[in-house]
Length: 245
Image 1 (cartoon, rainbow, N blue to C red):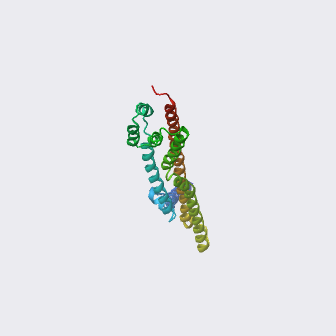
Image 2: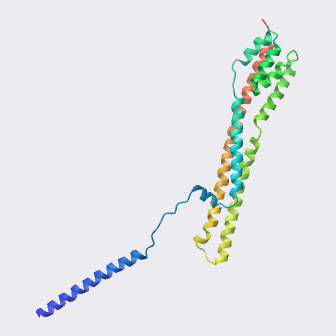
């Protein structure tokens, strides 16, 4: 009886040991079979490059937009220089008969506002309506100079998303071509087309939004200057109608 009990205990111990060994081996095999997940990092330039060749015209549109914005900002900033005493200084010169000095002062300032006033000063002695008409024409010409190339920003804001849409179509075509060639749908096969589709769409929209924002902002600054020129014109014409002391 004692021998039977000892043999039974030994068998149970052996079975438990073999079971534990099997679990350890199974755990090791499972760990070995599980692939290690590594994080793949991609730079911004690499991401943009995945948009395909359509990103070249989109990048060109972005460079053109940046050039126009910087160039117009410098021109408008220079034109926006304000001389609070312009009309008052001209009043003293005109009422004292120094018309040539008044014209020279306007030319030396070299701003849209002074150029418009110079047209009025050069026609002193003529009817007020003729002076106003000459100043209006000069003001319109100066505003047109400030608005130069702003319409290009508007055009870029419209066509940049279209280039992005073209990239989207090309990406979809790439996806279906690879599917038809392989006969299966796997993310590895269609990833290039998806990248091109999404990156080109995003690039076109970003460039379009940037162009539109600066187009309306620069136009707002030009409009503000145009209103200021109108106020200056009214003050100048009122000054001409004032009686000389």
